[in-house]
Image 1 (cartoon, rainbow, N blue to C red):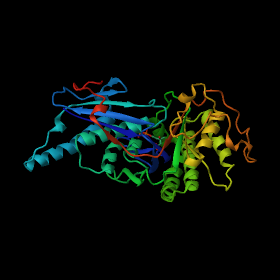
Image 2 (image 1 turned 120 degrees about the vertical axis):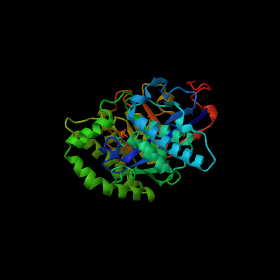
Image 3 (image 1 turned 45 degrees about the vertical axis):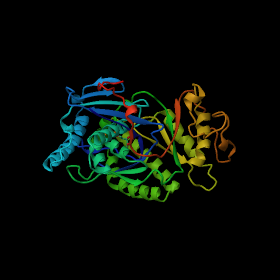
Image 4 (image 1 turned 60 degrees about the horizontal axis):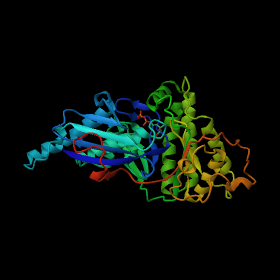
Length: 407
Ligand code: DP6
């Protein structure tokens, strides 16, 4: 039996992927760009064992066994990785140096997230990235990370961007077979250490309209969508790449907020409309714009972005994080134990959360921009940073026992 365990990170797009030109191969209607967040805070962990003694492929997701044959997207990822392994085995055989025929063995897969699934926290991205990365390690595939991302793309579009750390573009490609639609790293995690993120968990509930269904509904019905994919995103991708390479927070922040707003605008333009943000999400947007108005030099201090759910992700330079955490803590009071609401992993704040927030006396800060919200409107704050791509863990981190069943 051969066993490998890996973790993969969450990525949060700053230029959003929304819409497919091919729903089978998962080929997008526009390129997108994301930031990989630290696995120390959020990750998916996957263990895969391959053994000739196993009777069939089996899968356990967050402790529950699922029927692998019903999951077409996962099945495609298995098929692709096994085909590459099979070619390697055939070549090795022909050269007289045979390798273990792992491609013919059934596998047991056990995967878990350290955060709630389907809450708009990009769980499908990290989950599918962990699956495909672990398969590539198990089969010792001698292909590039972009090639691995091309396979992960077929599991979930945004998953292809979780194969790299740092700043990652998913180039949409043009070919019908999808061979040129994969992720590339724009800059590594060490490039812009000053950039951090604060995730405001607005709702732990499962979302109403899935991304998969929502985006195709947008493609079919939104008239604004054509403008977005043909005339807006291509220029934004260039602008965002430059902003990242130049570590230009002003451009990065404005593009991030505008692109999030436009993504939610095409959702509203979908017929019937799709709402992912709620009143709490919108209150955070107002607060961040008010906070940005207090900047001494007119430069933006923070940027928000929202995926297919109500949670906010706030990107900001490290130096502003304490202020932002205090600000959110004041307007969105917790109804939990302090450490459960905000764990302060990087010691960003001293003392109590939300008691005092620095910009309150600033002439440009309208304290009444929003009322203090009901306790618990934001359920958790996760402070995180830009970090690395998938990691291979040691054998003792395995989620499967010696007999190939979950621990
Ligand atoms: C709003 O990758 O979840 O998070 O390809 O159908 O699995 P499928 O969709 P998914 O879509 C994510 C969309 C988004 C924006 C983004 O991450 O770019």
